[in-house]
Image 1 (cartoon, rainbow, N blue to C red):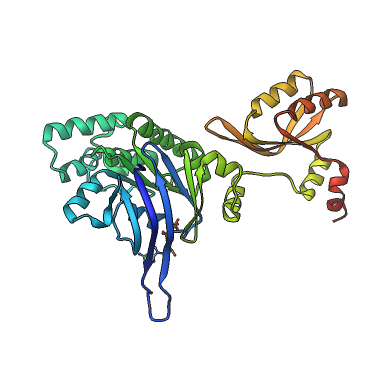
Image 2: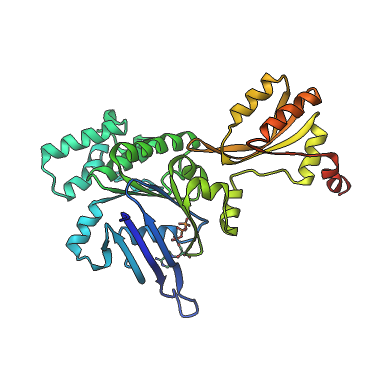
Length: 352
Ligand SMILES: Nc1ncnc2c1ncn2[C@@H]1O[C@H](COP(=O)(O)OP(=O)(O)OP(=O)(O)O)[C@@H](O)[C@H]1O
C-alpha cells in the first residue's frame, strides 16, 4: 500500500469578489507515493503545488476526493487524530520560518515541547539532531546570526524532531545559492537514506529533482500531466507541458542558425551525440576521443546525470584525421545517437 495516496483530489477557493470566478487550484489529482520515495512535484508557478502540500498535511480540507495516509482518509480524522497525523509529517519552507526570538536549540525543541516530551529526552534529541545537521556548536545562537544554509539546516532539524515518516519540502532551496543548495540537498538525501523518511519536494528547480528525487510528477494548471521515474520523465517527456519544462534546463540540439554560427567559430567537424537510454557517459566519450588523438571542444549542450544515468545532447567540434574521426564515430554510434552537421544543414540559416 502506498504511504500517501491521492484520489481525484480537487480544491477550489471561492471567488474573491462578485466579479471574479472561483479558483480551482487542484483539479482532480491522482498520486501514489511509496514509503522511502523522494517524490518531486514540479511545475510552473500557480500550478497548484503548494495547495497540494497543504492538502497532504491536512492543513486545508479537500473540496472533493480523498487524501489517504497509510490507507487512512485524513478528512475522516478528528482534531486529536489530526494533530497526531501532523506530528508524523515534518515540513520545511523556502523562507525557513524559524522563530527569530528563539535560539537554535529552542527552535528545534519547539515541536518536542508541543508534544510534551520529557526534558531529558528533549535535550538528548535536540543535541542529536543538531549534530546530524552539523550545527552542534550553534545551539545558543539566534537565527539572524546564521547563513541561509545554516537556517535551513535548523529547519530540517526542527522538522525531524518528532521523528516524522514524511517530510514535505516546499521550495526549500529556492532562496539559497547553488553551493548552499547542494549542501542542503545532500543533507536531505541523508535524511531519506539514513532515517528512511519519505520526502515530498515541491520545486520549480529541475536540479533539485535531478539530484534528489527518484519519482516525479509534473503539474500544470491543477492537474498532474505526467508522473513516473525521474529518468523516464526527464529523458522522454511525453506531454507538451513537461517537454517545455524539461527544455528550460536541458539544452538540446543546436538550431540551424546556431549550427551556422558554430561552424563559423569552430574549425573541424561538428557532431552531436545524443544520450537517451542512460548508457555511456561524457567522460567516456572524451577519453575515447583523446586516446584516438582527436582534438575536441564542447561547443553546445551538455549531459545531465540522474543518479548515474546520462541523457542529453553534446555537440562537439572535432579536429584530426578524417579516418580516425570516422572510426570513433562508428564506435559511438553503437550505443549513442550520432548526428553530424554538414554545411547543407545550415544553408537555410546562412541565407537567412
Ligand atoms: N487560499 C487561497 N485562496 C484563493 N486562491 C488560492 C489560494 N491558494 C492558492 N490559490 C490559487 O490557486 C492556484 C494554485 O496556487 P499554488 O500556490 O498551489 O500554486 P504553486 O504551484 O504552488 O505556485 P507557486 O510556485 O507560485 O507557489 C493559484 O491560482 C493561486 O492563486
